Image (cartoon, rainbow, N blue to C red; front, side):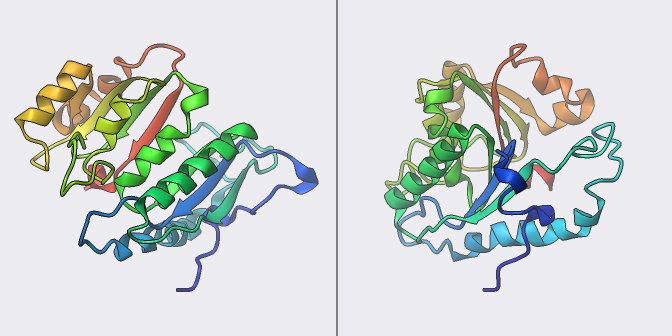
Length: 233
């Protein structure tokens, strides 16, 4: 597979040894379920990078969502560090490498941005914030991802918010964009509610706007955002 150009054409390092404000990195595999093939997810990071190329020429143009250019007329402050090595079914090894990279970026200090595969990667990514808490989790997803295990695997893509709820540095979570049905049963809904997770359905989000979610997050909180593309369907 031919690697895609970097996200938005960002460099892999900044000139003059400047520390970036944000570091993008990709990963192909997280924790794959037994007997399942996650090779399709390995294409995701490069697909995202490829899709970003249409906007790469406009980084210094006015962005009406931001009220100005992305970097506000200043030098670029984001880098794309490429993909870390992951291997299908090396679940523990993949988690260790994703967590280690997240911790490394936070130590710079910079904001880590992970792109790629399935939602199982969210678990080690959040684990990497252990020394930078407390954090709130804003999950944008059609599903709540609260299964304790599936096929005996407790770190798969149906379980990231359940595992997040067990992390001492996670102070709370807001789950936005929920709709239709998924792997969650009454058991998972009850567990999430006991924990104190705040649900915002897709209908509520469309009707009330972003405030439907933001009102649940304390002022000044450090927030980690996890986005599943099925929330955009």
